[in-house]
Image (cartoon, rainbow, N blue to C red; front, top):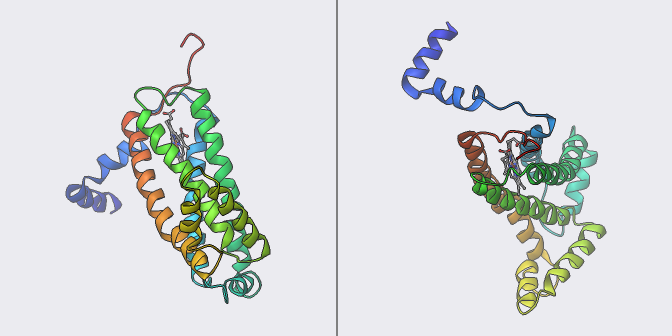
Length: 219
Ligand code: HEM
């Protein structure tokens, strides 16, 4: 029965060829360090899933942001769990991305023909840092407010265009409702869209080019 459904679907979509190319492709003998990219990918999916759930109750305005986060943590069923996973997942994501990148550096996996995979990886790293920076403000508590005050001020000392960057980030001179709306918009729309675009290219290249082998001493 499942075979028949598979045949039916395959005739119309070529799904078996796609499945084989993705999941049954040949890979060289590698070690556990090669699982770091997949671990990062899994964490990214977890962040997207828990992040979507959080937006159901989170309200991105100065009047309600703090209370909505407290409500999620203390009242919503399993809200503490969803928020906890998203909170710790953010740190896990940064650590995993960096350690994955270190594996790529130490194994020389950024060399020909994988330069574009590397470039998209650099973009992904910036996106992950951006997620952390914009997400930190959203609980709108004292820690969030002052961390973002300092963070935007640091960006503000960039030579020549610092003042302009600071005003774009804050949406004015001070941290206000505009800043919160801006950070929220970037956190839930701009960065996820960029992440997915870069990830599709990154993973496509990993599959198309194939994974690099563990370098030998004489390489
Ligand atoms: C959201 C962040 C990222 C995700 C989800 C991700 C995912 C992956 C996956 C699943 C692989 C294949 C398995 C592996 O080698 O571990 C991979 C390979 C690779 N990644 Fe990433 N990656 C990310 C960030 C980065 C960063 C920051 C860099 C470097 C700046 C990078 C550069 C590469 C390169 C060059 C390869 C090919 C490695 C090889 O063929 O040996 N990636 N990535």
